[in-house]
Amino acid sequence: MPLDDNMTIDERRKYLRKMQLRYHKANRAEQSRLLDEMQEVTPLHRKSLIRLMRGDLERQLRVQQRGPSYTGEVRYALSVLVDSFNGICAERMFPLLTHRVQELVHHAELRLSCEAMEQIAGMSLSTFKRTLRQLRQDQPQLARARPKPANGVSQGIPMRRIPWNEPKPGHFEVDLVHQCGATASGEYMHTLQLVDVTTGWSERGAILGRSYLVMKDAFLRILARLPFPVIELHPDNGSEFLNEHLVRFWKERVKDVQLSRSRPYHKNDNRFVEQKNSSLVRRYLAYERMDTVAQTNAVNQLFDLLWLFDNFFQPVLRLKEKKVVGSPGGDATRIQRSHDEAQTPFDRLCKTGVLAPEHQAALISLRDQVNPYALLRQIRALTDQIFALPCCQPGECEDVALTLVFPLDSKETNQEELWKCGQLHTAQLPTFPQLLLLRQQHDIMSPQTHLKGVCPR
Image (tube, rainbow, N blue to C red; front, side, top):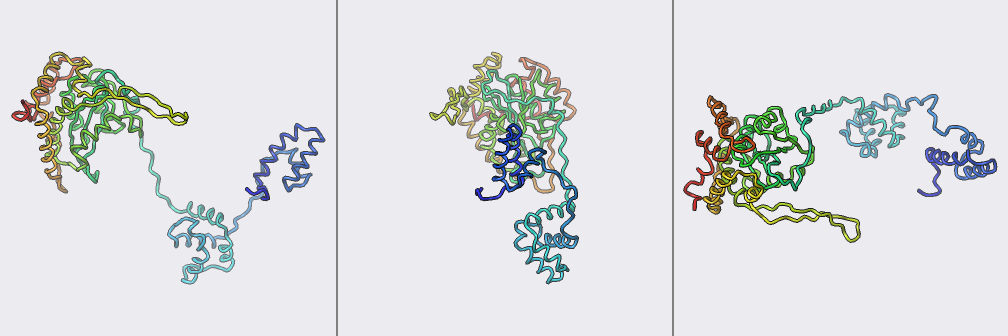
């Protein structure tokens, strides 16, 4: 600010407040010197300064407020002007204000007196903006959307991140991958994916829609195939996970399961499964729309093959150490990460010792019977067949019950009894051979059925 500019009222009062503290502490001679200094800085008279130093420097409100400067004729003319500009901002309207008034008067859109024309012509930009705000207050506004009620189920589930160095397998990050294509309208396929933080073991299931019926069926399939117990499930804050039905299902089906969730709008709280969404789902299915029963069942067959390929034959790296490294100047820092030797999720799982000896031997036998390269060729061929399947036509409806492994029919009681029998390992979950038995009873293709005649050495 140039030194020759005069002080505003606010700047002058701020200066006088600082001087008032010195003025009250000074003796008579010092007060006289301070008054001389204040006379030089401010344009106020000496007697006015003495009165201000002895009183309160807070600015007082007007005893009698000013009335409106512009008549109703001017306000009406301004409302017509603003409407003629189609509601643009005041800074864009103001330079053409007088010209637009003349145009509207010429075309008989307005009839103004000479006094009103002079008031509009002499109006400043700040006054025009203030009047414009008052005019817009009188216009009807769309009702603001009320805040959505909080999810009562999620309030009782703690927010946390599973530590990257978690030593015990069974802590799963959970996510849902949408296969909606360019539009999210209607029902379409999703991929439910679980990734174990410790070993990198991954499980996937394709579902049509996000109802509790299909979510429950996908979790039943995954839990039946999983060879080790589930300790924790960690989804995001989606209502497809955090609802009373699914939370009750988890607690009834999985013994002593821990439920946790990500912080809202913190995608990296599920960083392991988010990374696998790209490498294990999008890599094979891309972003294409899939919304039929045939596509969903075919993708589940693909995921059966990928269960073998990714968990038994695809090595993964695991973070071993993180160090905070400072720059030579000491200003910026970075995190230096080091990883251990690449191993398959199954090899990592065997080293943890959580598998029962008979289960580990069965899985090793299954791995030894599979030709990984032939399995990969079969995955690629099945992927091409999936992309050749047509999507749902407008007006057609798909029956999601045709995608279920555990359909809701009269045999459900027998399925539950079979589910509860043979509880061999610590989490009270069926083993992989039991899943094969369930699938054979319902004529559902198993991984071994897919590989028959193709993958054995």
